[in-house]
Image (cartoon, rainbow, N blue to C red; front, side):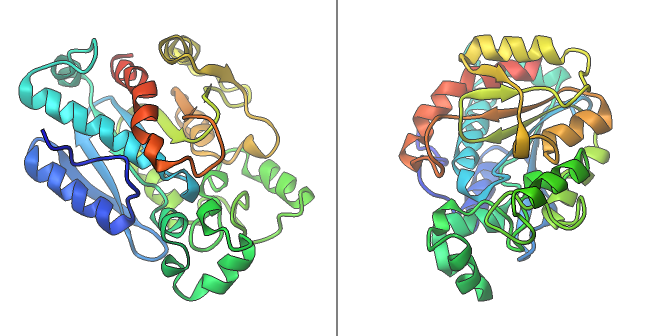
Length: 300
């Protein structure tokens, strides 16, 4: 069987084409745009199963972590294949699981940042010189959106405290990463994923990042019921350690906001190990590493 999603770099145009191919091949897969990036690129959400009590999986908040798009779409394609063949994904009867529980996948929260990391100056519109200066010419390391705001620092959960930490670290304005903007939820990408959560019954959320092979599962004193148990099961299944973010990684993130806003389980999964961007050739290997964990999470 010819696969649609492979371990190759996917700029936004190619991702859109492949999503359309997947939806055409598997008509039970539903697609919609939940918003647009600063440069007007669609932020897609794909849905399978029962719309009540969905698990949300969102990837590529950071440009240089675009490999997470490939990984989550490889998994979605495996689920679609299994549904079409009435087979399982690993040990999980996925058709039975999705009868009572749904999944929503946002494969790329930050299309502009991902394209800058993949394509370099060609994706920078009129800001090529500015971004080249920000990154010392290493476009591939770019994490922020087109306006230089780190989407995973832009959520309204501990944002003020994080903003003060950024200022103390000398991060005062647009940057390749770690600048959370001048106010929380100021960016269209942030608003798109927040609006998705506010308008749907999302029972738990998973943010896919790279790298570290760790799972973050709490935010401050907020410990939703089931969070620890789910985290322990995911850790046992994957071998990933459970950890707590510190310093500039604490607060302002999607996982933090979801936990604080809804008092429901939220997780950040840091896939793989190394220096971002992780080699795209390793996407299949990294997918194999987290496949059973992702599939298990559907039924938890």
